Every structure is written in C-alpha cells, then in structure tokens.
Amino acid sequence: MNEKKEFATFAGGCFWCMVKPFDELPGIIDVVSGYSGGHLENPTYQDIKAGNSGHYEAVQITFDPALFPYERLLELYWPQIDPTDDGGQFHDRGDQYRTAIFYHNDHQKQLAENSKKEIEESGRFKNPIVTKILPASTFYQAEEYHQKFYKKNPDEYKQDRAKSGRDEFIESHWDNPKA
Image (cartoon, rainbow, N blue to C red):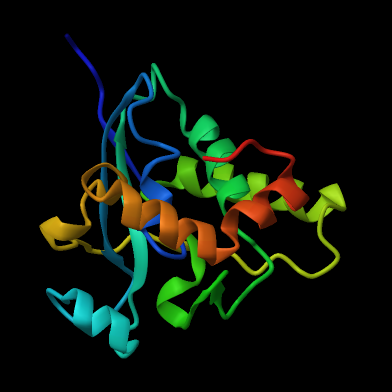
C-alpha cells in the first residue's frame, strides 16, 4: 500500500468533540487530540485548562489526500464549530477553546482561506467569521486519557456533548446531522 500521508490540524473547542466527526473514515489514518499554537513546551492538560500556555485544544488528522482530500476535511470541519465565537466554543470558554485552522503548507493555507471566504460570503452568519488560519506549529499530543475519548468513555462523552450546546448549534446553523 503506497498511501501518502499529510497532516491537518484543526481547533474547534473541546477536542473530545472534534475527534468523532473525522475518525474512521476511508482515507483518515489517525485523529489525535492535543495542543497547538502556544508558547509552552510540552504542555499538560492542566497547563491548557489554566489558559496560560497560549495553546488551542486541537486535533491533528493524518490522512491520505488521494482518498480523502484536504477540501473534504475542511467541509467536515466548519459544521462542527461556531466560527463567530472568539471566546471559546459552546460551554467551553477561554482562549484554549477558540477555533483555528493550522495549515501545514501553502496549498492548505489557500484552501483554508478559500473555504473561510465561502463561509463569510454565504450569509449563514450575521456576525463576522473569527476562525483564524494560522501556520502549523509544534503539535503536542494530549494525555492518553483524552485520545479517542468518545470510544473509551462513551457515557461521559455523550453527557458532555449534550450539555455543551454544540449539537443544537449545528442543527440550527448548519442543517447537519449530529456527529
């Protein structure tokens, strides 16, 4: 098998809710929860939760672009978030829960900028789109407890997601089935 591997890194609030929409799709090799965009080396979950490291909670997706193009990842990313909220996502508040697309090359940057422009011009939102498009920096994998959380702790995952308001937002703004 000669699969080509690329990375996509997305911040969309709590990383627990950002794994499942991308996980186990053909061409997706792995989805890892972690931290990106900050200034502290080797941050822990407690560092991130405290909000002083500058990191975003993020997922890093390893994918085969021949089977699952980056454009499709972007199409899946946007409907998982509220791109107008610069204070966090849903019930998770703070800079570590803001949204961002971290690009790994110029092609990803261009595609991300184009997709953001499409969302801005769609008229779907009355408030400005604040999701940042940033160069990828060091991605730190989160503690094992957080990896594939929706599978390892399905009841806690469902409870947290239900109280977050994410699904209601998705349904009312994106006309998208629940993830």
